[in-house]
Image (cartoon, rainbow, N blue to C red; front, side, top):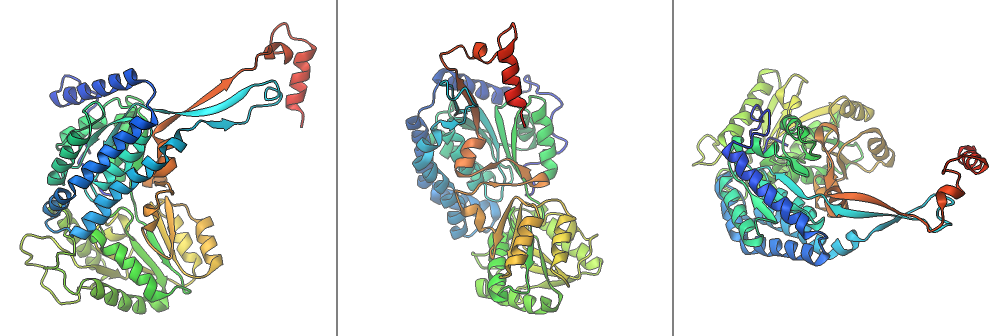
Length: 494
């Protein structure tokens, strides 16, 4: 996922609490931590109340969210903002409200023999960490703030949020929602640019969640390390799509292009390149044209086709295409109406664009695309796809299309990615009971559902000793003797 804030070279060498920005955030952090400690046990009723207040505030401000996102993007479909930002923020809260009582129950664990026979008991209790810092991105700013916040609040924590400066109108609406739903002691927001983000990442939180680019994540981890703050990183990378010879091409292409054109490809889970049988490449391109035309008969003036977030990213994407063309790539626009994208009346739209004849030195094959560009690679034998995927950094997602059970199993066993969809793209993130997260350069840690609750909790191990003198019975108590040797022999016996 591309950068949520321009933190590179901005992270301070130390947490300078005399800086006004840092001092203000530190003040809020201290207030939240003190109130958390004074509260003690956070009951299920309190957690549910906090989550319900947030859900109700999001619902109340949904029209303002849609309007703000349209302003920030210059063109953002209402339906996408409702489905992927508003609804996708409320659903995790609804789910957590229903299940948090069950999640909070202590987990019984086995107690070693013979302590179990003597009355010893082992269990785990999930305890809030304290104050969690959340650095959220610009592509789905509401969802990727309030979605994980559901797990953070379900775990009994407080939270401080730093939204992206790339979506200022949406950040202001989110700040209104937070102020209306929660006391500053529960949840707070700090808006601003790189200097705010840099100071924020260096605060001594009890946990920190960052959603953004892998390059920026390295700076986040470096800043967090100064205070030994544990981090959850939701990043991105180049998520491959492997199309088998056994795939239903029309169905596969329709689902792939829905995922690739949604939000104009500005999704961390968007398909980043296709690997297709060499003899089917022209058929697949023809089906892509049909699929795009069915969804978007026009694009420039179509309010249902999203604009690129800002001029910087618009130029980056165009330069990526220029680089591919200069290095021998065949650039194919799928715009169905032959529209002129040079004059757009304030939007920054780019048609879904394919690149054939890719080479490894092209930027489009080296960098996460985060836009409506889609390179295509071909293969002779399916095993080539697995070797190629494994030659690259581990992706956030991998997508397999096909009906060959052995191929599917080979892909699942032979590759490592944050998540997988079989015969679709992106849909795994919508399953609230599946953990969402990356691996390697695509991230660490996960959230969603029970795993999210655990991710933002401390699993406290608790052992209750039996009433008898276990140390004496087991020979652990000096002076050592026959009972000691008996215990040693029993525990080291093969």
